[in-house]
Figure 1: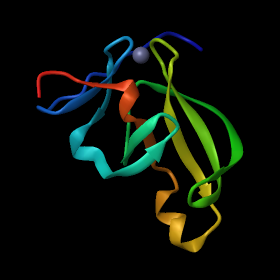
Figure 2: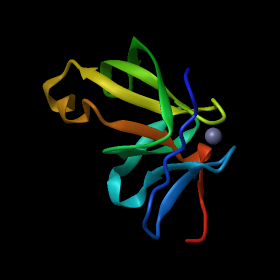
Figure 3: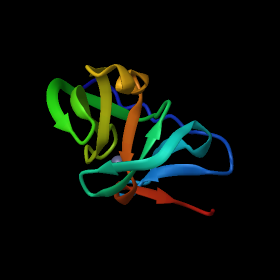
Length: 111
Ligand SMILES: [Zn+2]
C-alpha cells in the first residue's frame, strides 16, 4: 500500500468520504447525477481523489457488460463505488475512465 498521502481539494463544493471525512471528489467534476449504484443513487465523476482501485472484473450493470474496478477510500478502505475500465457497447464508451461514487457513501460538508 505504501505511505498514506491525503490530497485536499479546493472549492466550495467537495464530497467527502462519509466514514473518515477525507476529500473524495469535487462537485465541478460531476459528469452526471443520474446513476444507480449498489446502494441507491450514485454520481458519475470525471476524476476523484484519495482512492485505491481493486482488480479489474467483468460485471453486468444495468447498461450491459463492463470491465470495472471497485473504488476504495484510500484512508478508511470502505468501498465508495467503481471505475469504468472498459465498456463493450458503443453507446456506453463515454464512461471509460470515469468514476461512480455512491451518494450514500459520501458526505456534503457545509453546502
Ligand atoms: Zn474514507
